[in-house]
Image (tube, rainbow over all chains, first blue to last red; front, side):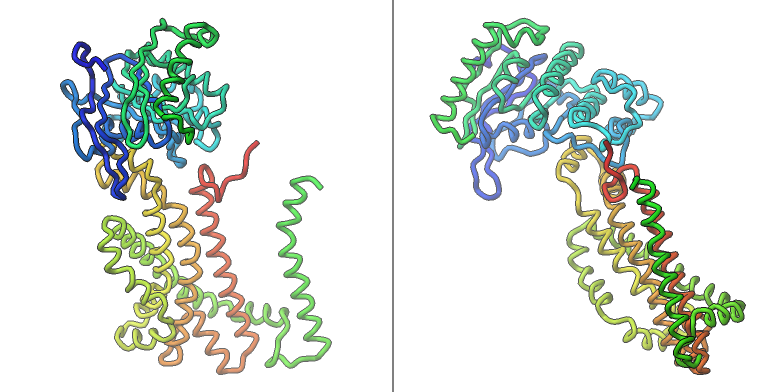
Length: 256
Length: 264
């Protein structure tokens, strides 16, 4: 991994994470996210990819090693695997929450909420409650809530894993649009080879027991990527490379 | 059968059962020619309720004052204590067992003591009813405040929410269904507490509440009046329960599973 020549937004340096029950989740992990990049962390269950993401977000801290930011830690958004919407708040109320907690006045918040909902295609659903929405729409609300604080870094922890294939690919398209429009940096955790190749410009393949990065693959294909991209040779080529790297990472084990 | 007709029938059924029961009761009393001091028929009871309405309704108001007074303090005390418990596991661990002791000791056994130490009967009654009513609110609300999805806690940490913001935006709304469930139980219990306390007080001193009227009627062998008082008490209990069920629906129907109908 050549990290000397490219600047990074955030870097995990020689990070170990041992859980309180003695499990060594991560050992000697080095990884970085570059400004403006869409980086996927791909690996089998238990490789610590979610934990790495949570460390970047400050939700958990490394046992040893460090999380280093180039400059100030930027505003960051986080999208969980579950939509994590408060059922007693409307769509509007859920997206307002981060601003409300930060003390942003309603008048200032209103246009920003409208903008965030517009970006994920939820204009007109402001007054709906989460239970009235489909799984895909709930995830859109969750993304709007992450975008409303105008983060420079968006971290997503297997956000589409629970969705059906069709909804998932539509959300992938929309996510790429948001990414390009906002010039965000995205850190995306997934266990899907296809999803990571379609979305990312860079994939970090991780291995388990203990969690570490074993391959750093640049996906050299132009954006915008549309559905046609899924049928190209380039796409297939990268899917094969990444699959092989993943297989090696798992060392012949298939306990996904 | 259409959905609407099914619903109407469902609502009508309990009334139908009630009417059949009352008619059966009246017929049973008349056919067997039972004396009124043994078992009065519902018509006789209704008559007595009408005759005694002045005294009984005044007494009902006294009982209601105690009931709602106790309930108010149960909400403040139980809810407040629950919020305090949610702030620290240590506080909860220290005091929760005493709340349990207060709850499991039968109120009939404590009431005479309370009546000794608190001279003002009204206040003593209030305290008795409060002891019975506050525990369901405390235990339900405590459970609700602690039942927080860890993902939400992560979210709050991410937003750098302060302690009171976590309480206000997350814990309290999340605990609302639990709190309202506790309130439904506590409403009925505070009435029971008030009545038990009045009975205890009534044997010692003169009272004015509905329970005292029932006791008084029994001394005078005015059985229809006993039933009349009892009917008023039951009706009050039912109304309190219905009122809190409605309140619960009002607050929760837009979002909580317990109060929503499945769509689509």
